[in-house]
Image 1 (cartoon, rainbow, N blue to C red):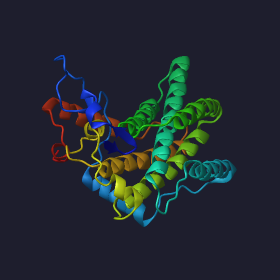
Image 2 (image 1 turned 135 degrees about the vertical axis):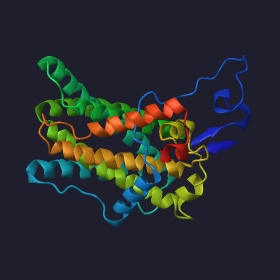
Image 3 (image 1 turned 45 degrees about the vertical axis):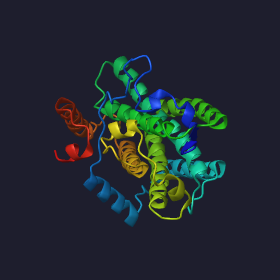
Length: 301
């Protein structure tokens, strides 16, 4: 019996798609490739980001009544979520983290898509440009969805988790839509604070994965990165789950900073992250053209 995270496979009954074996009928197996572009955090960037967060956690101090209400709501949800998933930051169990990341990432992919959709329809309705916000919001939504797909390759959600995700998605999407139409800044501030808690969760996972003797170090330290993660972040072929978590943590730091900045901007201000998207797109196009797939190739650019 082979155990991968919480997914259990019988060695005699593993589907051929999960093995290097050829299709029994001679058909070509379909493998995933990233059809979009995303930022690939290189070693120096990851080191700087993690070092900065280790010395002092980044936190946007609430300014005014609305910010305080939003921050209070996020903190209430955070502690309730800890209770619901049985999460303890001192030495979290693998089971509590599986619940946590699956629910967290399934919900985190909602705000960006809601905001992008509303701004898209407003752009069409008013027949005017959006100032580049839509692209950043869609990139955020897709990035969070990719986080979920990566975890789905490693962990299997139970019925309770699926019901929780379904219920939360309906409620959150409806609430986000109403609030974003009325006052978009509230949603961006909410997401900024939500991402602050996500960053702390992933920093906690990194810390305990790197600490011998902890519960997740015992079970997850040797987990290999799934193929979808290797392709998405251009990791080395022998990358581990720890390498994946570091990339995800850096992504969440970026989403945190973007949403706090969007919350402080005017809704007709030009998006300051457009240049970053162009740079990432150029890097992705260059990598596809030359056939580069590994991190060493990418970092040598």
